[in-house]
Length: 341
Image (cartoon, rainbow, N blue to C red; front, side, top):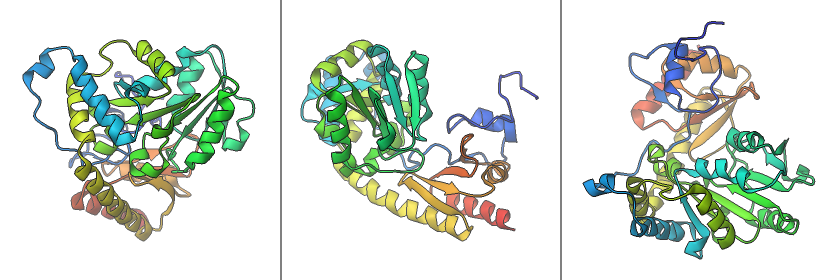
């Protein structure tokens, strides 16, 4: 098998979305540039505020972090600031949590975001993949994404609270990853944390600013302090927290964007429907396609400079994010029309 000197295997399917260098190793560089629909990140990003030079020159101080945490607590409905932890993306908390417990039996309800199982397994825990919450058995830690990535499964808050209370009674944890939860705020448990419940919030996906690297953990105060200590000082950058504080307090933008994403996802459904593709799940930021020849369709789109997300463990699945406006929708429509021909 040919492996490029850069380390890319051009024939391997991607582990995560958004890996454009690997896509170029596989397909070459498209003349019109990439239309990257592989990540589920909002293509209509929040307008960046002006960042003063001092924010780049100094370590972030307590007042900047406090402003960011306050904006996040209000946006997510968190009752106490002490419950909220700021991090360089929710991924940082995902990687830390397995190091805060002794050996545990961990049930990951999936298929879902791969990093949950990977981080717990790499830390020496016994990880089991479960298809439903009913099959977690005697696990001491249960991990659920709500809504789920990539199929968009949704869990009602009351159901998850009951699971959390059962686990807390045994000294366990329920970890609820709400990375795509800003599109469905009615599902959030961030304002209802109690013993044994940890909620993860991602900033970059909904606000379209994944490169900012900002996220939050929400837990009861003692556990939040433990997470904060594990992350150490300056867990997020000053510019990230300044942007986060501004964006999370912008209720008008947030409300308008939820409406826009509903319209954009409906437009994507129409494009996929005209191509005869079955949408079997997703959120307002992405759609999950079930296609008999999904990997062949992935290749077809990739050769035309359109990157979607295939899955090694699900040969009929592709995840497709939102095209960035009319031009992107037209390009996707034309590529899918050529596939039908």
